[in-house]
Length: 159
Image (tube, rainbow, N blue to C red; front, side, top):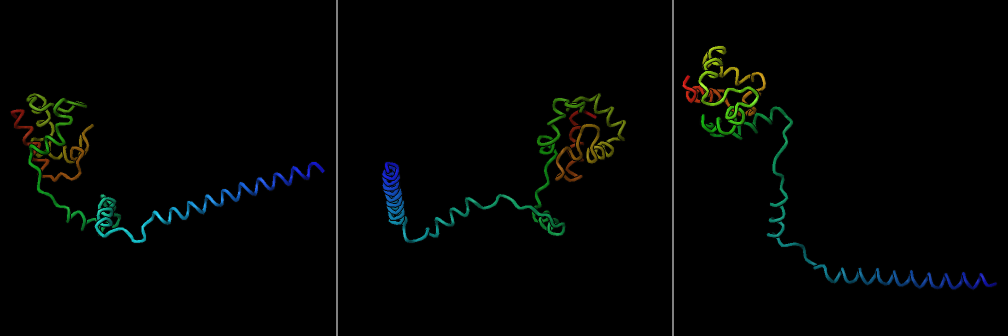
């Protein structure tokens, strides 16, 4: 008999706790409805948000569309000094990975003689040689930009 009283007390207390939790739940719902405005965001807020979350780039996988995108992204040609500063000097300024240093007349004369002069060195720079990547690691460089940079390095070395 005593167990029945314990069960009854438990169910009464449990019911009271569930009722209190339910009341809290509905109070929260009512408070949230009162805090949220009935109108949507202003158009300028929406425009500002969309500008902040717009994609930074586009991935193009269709070769036909890629040609159009590449043509649209034409740029001014780099000067020889820009190519040298942005690409070549990464290795040639310090002679990294056996690259002939800028201004080293003996090293550049030997390379130019072995490769066949300016045109041979330019072809090596375009294809890549030993540890040097093709086009100095920048595939966007044109042949003329590379040739101008090679010519400048040869001139600096006095070759």
